[in-house]
Length: 460
Length: 129
Image (cartoon, rainbow over all chains, first blue to last red; front, side, top):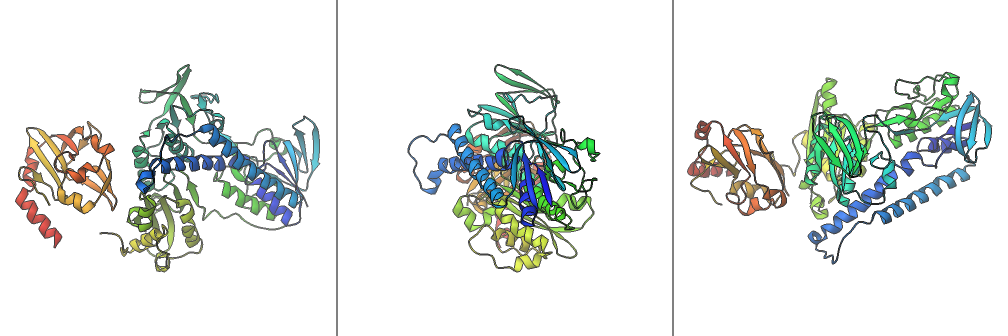
């Protein structure tokens, strides 16, 4: 089996390694750098920024912890970016060495399908090469969406990709779109000292999260003095020497030095020769696939963001594993029933499974239990008392359907909920499990107890 | 625990002091004691309308988050901005510098539903049992 993977992001590189493990001879084509958006422009560099802003936050309130810091505490964007580059390059090297270990050939260039078995690659030097394959996996990902009302110029009106070219911390910034990317950057830049205004078309931030979680996040943004405007549309943007002026649907105007556009993503399905082969695409340009991650053309698979499903790195990786197995003679189907998500705002948010509003929409009778971080000894010791655990459970069967956490280390704690839902556990079983003291995870146990109004450390 | 004579009390442990059409509201000394160290208050917007017996602000203490229930109906004409930076003032001086909002009241007859100092003293004694 000769497999060709186009795109070496968290979907493509994982698919390549798995297929090689299963005995395939694998070639990967990558136009930019292995690791894709996730490693080079998304998940990882933002977490480097989050880490720096957290250090800044802690140092600023060091006195609360009995630590005296003498002298000025100042963020240095240049050094933060250098650290980011170092983190990325370590990870890039890691993926490249895994490729070597598995005899995966990496071709740096742009790939285009000629037919079902051949791909033309034009490398960085402009040299053309034709590669034969028995199967192809398209894993070309997505890019920040750009719309004409506020055209991204990379200088004043930025996409999330352009943030990495900033050399100075902006004095003021308007963030269009209060989704995951918008909220993460709002928290990062606010800590670094930027005046932030967020503009969101929908009535609440993080509209796919549980409503209670969004509410707490909105309050946290307010505490940080981040201005949030919801149910407002940006009509137009005008750039001048002093910055950018936005005209809003309610007639108001906003001015800031920079604008960050985070309104969603477009799919990288152009220029791949898909039309030539008659590969089906959806309305937004996403490549259509079945449960086996195969397109309508046998032997051609697609995974990750380009398929337009759940735009998360770990979902792309899972789809890559499924596709790799199927390429190598397996018959596996993708299962999206239990997908955790993590948002690295301050505080963090993580969730898995059903939101309470989704249960209502679907007519599923549910009961919920909640527990606040501020009732945990560990949270007080850490000085991180903001947060909430919430469990959504089936009112009839007591089965855990959803777990939602906002608070410190939510992205790690969530996996107990992921395991519980995956294993089909009942609330009682989670509540009965001994949790180590003093930990934040105790809050999940208490939230489980609270479903039956039996939380120990909760009044009323 | 302090209970002042010249103000009215709501069963959700808020107080109101009225002069003419203007009312100042806050939480009681009992409430701040129950809450513990207050770390944040989500203040209402000036010009927003509030209804008696509904939330006008939200307080976060190290122990709990809880609603501040307005004892009166009306329009918020001023909020205590000092609390945004220093919410602990509510703990220190709940009836004075720890006031929360000033409201232009709509219906003075609502005040008749509230408790006076001795009634409130009995009320919290009952609640404590």
